[in-house]
Length: 99
Image (tube, rainbow, N blue to C red; front, side):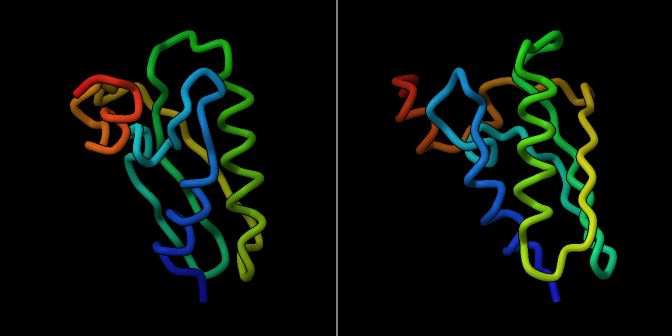
């Protein structure tokens, strides 16, 4: 059975190509829903019009689909609530020199 911890572990391997911090620590992941063998990830990006939009969402979908027991994965990119740096983990802020 796929767990939320499995999914978040996989998501920690996904990065915005412009930032050296994974999408979980950046605060881009808003929700993970698991329905048996299907996983739905709701996330945002740091900015609308992000040139890496397709790359990031496809990378997330592909990585989640690799988790044993996952038959399908979907990524939904949303813009509400808007992302801001307050969503970042302390480790991410430190890594980016914001602390």
